[in-house]
Image (cartoon, rainbow, N blue to C red):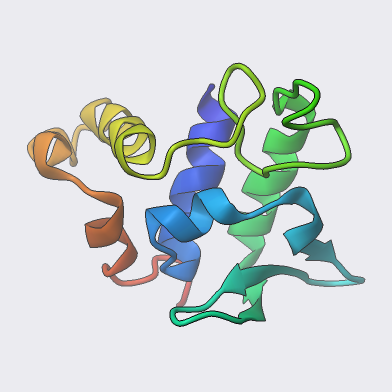
Length: 132
């Protein structure tokens, strides 16, 4: 599902979130206000904070939501994990995120040489492409 891969990749790149933080996001963690979108992110050591999402990240999430898969009791159109599997369950942070990012990278001419070694944590530590 390209929309899910884009939303996931943009969350990792645009907010520098590690894989386990991205898959921990629920629908109710995404808050749309008048001119901005924020995400309630779990902090290292506990607690949460709202972080503003760059517009490309917010648009990627908005494009993904109509295609998001759901399955009761794990998820519904209004509740549950933001990024779901094909069966409507929460994605597994390590292998599924890594494999998804590697699959996307393998199709990009400038990233094919990195695809086999790419990790979500490594991507999260890279410079944010959405900041001027």
